[in-house]
Length: 353
Image 1 (spheres, rainbow, N blue to C red):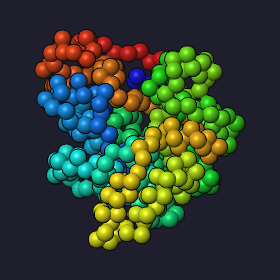
Image 2 (tube, rainbow, N blue to C red; image 1 turned 135 degrees about the horizontal axis):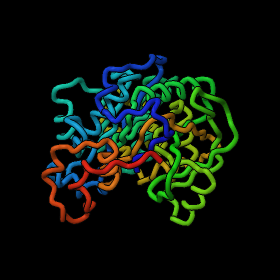
Image 3 (cartoon, rainbow, N blue to C red; image 1 turned 90 degrees about the vertical axis):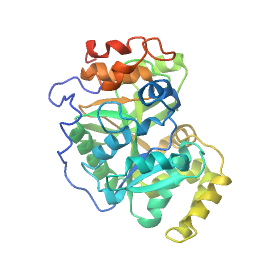
Image 4 (cartoon, rainbow, N blue to C red; image 1 turned 45 degrees about the vertical axis):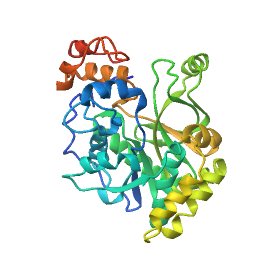
């Protein structure tokens, strides 16, 4: 779903390139970005196969211009956060894609997971790694499969939340989006009392977090004014690690063993051993649902945001922006598992709702 988080033309832009040279204000030397790029993008595979002719993880695919989704995410993050304090969490099986992605540009820190142990490990491993290098770190989590228009406004909001966290280190702030329908593939956030205020509105406590509820429950949440979870989160590394110890203690204990080997020749072996013994855990369901008292939520400002998790969402994004990439002309209209209206991408535009 292409979500225009506040229907106003004041900050609206449908040009992915318009903000690539615009920077927002700088931040504390303890601010780190974690870019989540370890997934396989299974739901988008039918479209990816049509675009590149293979089952490539979607974060390494150029959907809108010549840049992959991962590169777009890194460019967005770099508007406010340094490449030296940006960590990309990926998978050993993605090594070829990673080499191709960074063949001609400077690499951030790449942490490759030896096995898929779920999203909890994908979040907590780089958090432990960062805390081992910078105990005072504040981390911002960015999935690598999002579309954001008006990126300077978006990153300015992230920096404002970081500044709030500096004074409220006991909280982890989720960025929430105003929902327009009862989506069952997102987490839902019930906002509570105001904890503070940013220029874009209040930061609120989280009364309840529920990951991917059934449709009747999602309808109830929509009517009650709950928010979608964008999976973008800002927290002190120490607080996030504390949440991990509380909710997934065995996984956290495995990851804590890595810290003493950071920067040594044994680091890779320690990571492999930790992952071999680790259970598969979902971050939203296992961690966020279990520590709502640590959570806060800030609603996104006036930007366009979408999680590009399915072919339908890609179609909606392209239609909203009124663009037709070169690969669209090569698609077979009758390809299984693809939206029937893909050949007409350039003719539609979703209204702001």
